[in-house]
Amino acid sequence: MTAALEVKGLTKRFGDFVALDNVDLVVPEGSIYGFLGPNGAGKTTTLRVLTGLARADAGSARLFGHAPGSVEARSLTGFLPDVPGFYGWMTALEFLQFAGGLFGLDHETLDERIPLLLDLAGLSGVDSRVGGYSRGMKQRLGIAQALINAPRLLMLDEPTSALDPLGRKEVLDMVESLAGRTTVFFSTHILADVERVCDKVAILDRGKLVAESGIAELKARYAAHRLELKVVGDALPLVAALEAASWTTAVTAENGGSISVAVADLGEARREVPRMIADLGLGLDRLESGEISLEDVFVELVGGRS
Image (cartoon, rainbow, N blue to C red; front, side, top):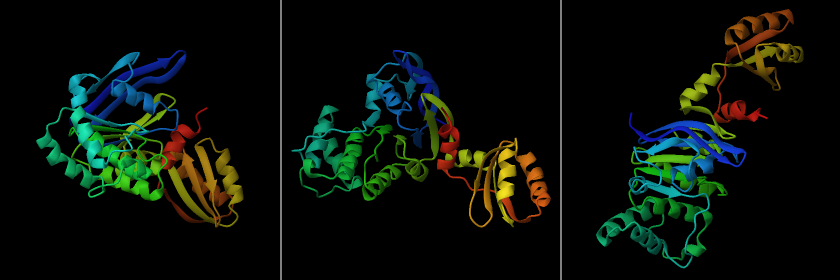
């Protein structure tokens, strides 16, 4: 596996506030990598360090082996900030020509590349001024602009934030189409977006990395510690007994006798749950490992931190 991005021990402080605390990341080349965390977790600070807009206090980062902010790293990187700026009087074509000129790209290269990027962004044939674009159109144009130098690594900071459902879908479709063509480092707090388009995810909370894994592996790891059961009879005494057990971490009861149990010791749970049900004179209709979403994992990892 070739790494597009490697971060080791990255630490950034603002006075006494620790924005990043010894963060380690490895982003495989060609992947769509979700960088996930609640607002204020340190995602934007990480991107500022990776793009050379801020300096780390400790640790290191390498983009295809190059230091952030170096000429080599910049030539290999495209970046879309969370609130991109545009010249409203330009058309999409003019804006991409302008962006390409900043990279020193020649007219022949731009004439070949810009139509492809406009098509990718769904803006082919759109001659109106950027100032009249919807937020979704601007975000798609922003991604096209970030791709004008044909980067090997594209970094996106909250690209679907504040978009309506249609705008989000259009941007996510565009990001998804880049899989295998360029590496995408996708920073967001929207779990459903990551689950849809990303193949690997890192979860950051209060400057600390709390998980890094493939999404399927991460969900499987936590699914192994959740039981779904359904009983026949009054489930309330069982819910109380489960909540009091030392090996449970969360119990959720639903109508109809269905209960979801997060457990710290799966073996103990499998032994004790049937015994509890029998002692309470209930019938067991179903007992199985439960499905878990990325949102379940996220809440379990960061939701209870104080």
